[in-house]
Length: 167
Image 1 (spheres, one colour):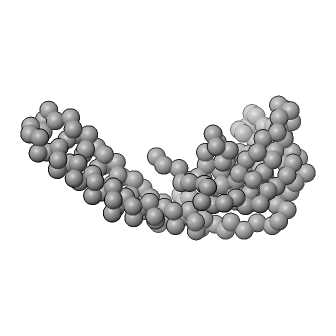
Image 2 (tube, rainbow, N blue to C red):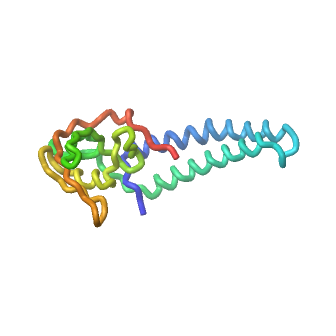
């Protein structure tokens, strides 16, 4: 399986990898050395915590490298009147009589608490490529679906404002 990423997603991931290799890795190794010098390693919590931090950093580097290696690069371009990546969309939820604003992003950037929804989410799949004014059925699973109406589609947002989700 692959993740759909934009060129900017990959650039940001490469920047994080470089930072982790050049800065975080060096700091983590120093922390391990310092903690090791404090004596008995079997009862040295500081040593075990430093090793854990070092291992988490290395794991994150491997994870990002694997994602880049297996990624499918997708375009951020969309028609002016269609919902596309990085577009801000105002959506009316008929069932709740509520209007909310979302930005459509790639899966790696999804963060529903910040209004960033993945194009792979049920709502993202339903509205992606649709036009303002359209009424769309959002299928959550075999038993539940709901209808939304696309009120408006905004320009692409400043990509620097959207960060890569960290694990």
